[in-house]
Image 1: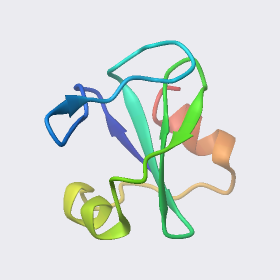
Image 2 (image 1 turned 90 degrees about the horizontal axis):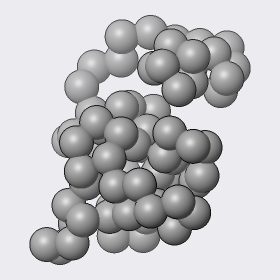
Image 3 (image 1 turned 180 degrees about the vertical axis):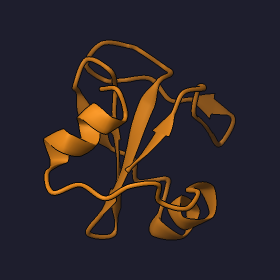
Length: 78
């Protein structure tokens, strides 16, 4: 999981949350060969235009590990 504070642009399109329309301050999750976006309001959506290779290129080194999903969310300020 990594924070993505700026707008996420894919194929010249700014990605917006399907639940609330927000377009910045994402958490990007890579799990089971899928990339998920989570907005600050907690809506989640799969992003099929991104893949694990993109995530690995975009993510920096991990700065912490957490026992729970909620612990990671707290660490990232969500």
